[in-house]
Length: 218
Image 1 (spheres, one colour):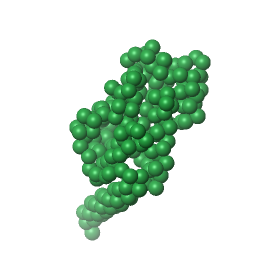
Image 2 (image 1 turned 60 degrees about the horizontal axis):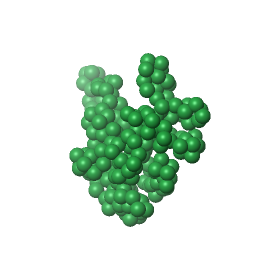
Image 3 (image 1 turned 90 degrees about the vertical axis):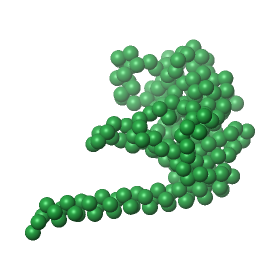
Image 4 (image 1 turned 30 degrees about the vertical axis):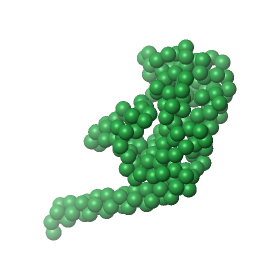
C-alpha cells in the first residue's frame, strides 16, 4: 500500500473538514450577532470597512499585527453616545509562530472628549519585565491594587494622572480584564482575545457603558 499517499490524502481531508466547520460556525455567529444587534436596536453589516471605521474613530488597536479584518459591525446609540460594536481580528507573527487575536470591540466615537490619549490594559509578566528595561507604565503609589492589575501608558503622564481619579482607579480595581484605548477623544473598550457571545451582547454593551462612565467621570 502507498501509505504516504494515503496519509497525505487523510491530512488534506481533515484540513478541508476543519475549514468548512470554521466557516459554518462563523456563519452561524454572524446570524446570531445580527439577531442580537437588532434586539438592542442596532443596524447590522456582516462585513466592515476598516478605513471607514478609522475615519469615524481611530484607535491604536487598528495598527496591531497584520491580516486585519472587521466583521459583524453594529451601529446605534448607547444612551446619548454614538456607538459601534464589531468583531475585530488581526494576526501577529508568521508561520508556526503566528497567532490570530479575535475580540469584540465597542467604539464610542468622541465619547472621551477632553480625555488624554492613553491605553489601559491588563498587566502581565512581560509588561513587568519590560518595566525593568525602561518600558513606561503610569503607576499610582496610593492605588497598588490598580497598578498591579493594569498597565497604563500614554504621551502625557500628567494629564493621565489627572484623568485617573481615585474613583476611576477604584472602579478598575474591581473591574478586571478590560482594555481601554482613548485616541483623539475616541474610546475603544474590549477584552483582548475574547469575543462576546451573541446572547450576552446587551449585557456586554452595558458593561462597556459603565467603563466609559468611569473614565469620562459622568
